Picture 1 (spheres, helix red, strand yellow):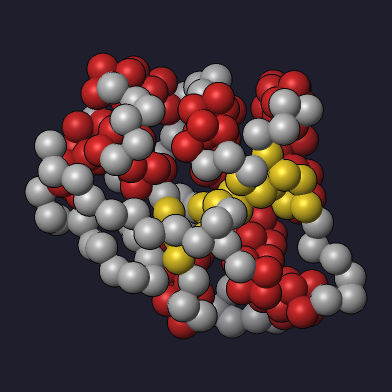
Picture 2 (cartoon, rainbow, N blue to C red; picture 1 turned 135 degrees about the vertical axis):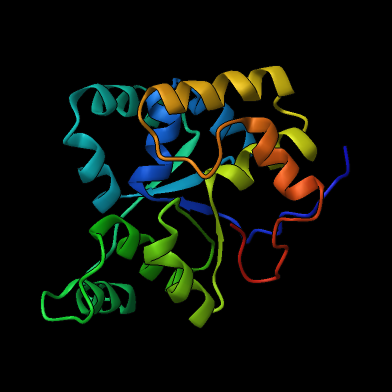
Length: 193
């Protein structure tokens, strides 16, 4: 397999959708190995806390030190950006609170946006020169570069996500890895999908 580059600016800041891929499948240890000190924001934690099984899983792991819990502080530039992006009168429509918190936090504090919600994050990240990664890029990075995940384990993880109802861009981990290793994936200095 060819090696590809996944440039990220640490830390990886996770939205609820991306984080739940790991929570639903009991793969938080993998995420901790790949991106130590990834950031979970208070807004995202509140979204996760609404699902009892995910709240319990996240609660056990946050004490492990794998993740850094942060907040969108008021007053701050990121809080003002968060308020602007989530206001009800925003056209065409307000964005999700978790994605917005992550984007605003990364814009003013640095890091990489971790989100599967390309509809909400892609344009904002491109307009503000923010890097972002999706589950497809993370799985490919784990298999191709970091060697933290075998193809067999990647397929098991991918199948578990599909079983749990995660909306993914392809049906197998091999397709996700091939997207990058064959050159079909975009390797732009600003964003990854």
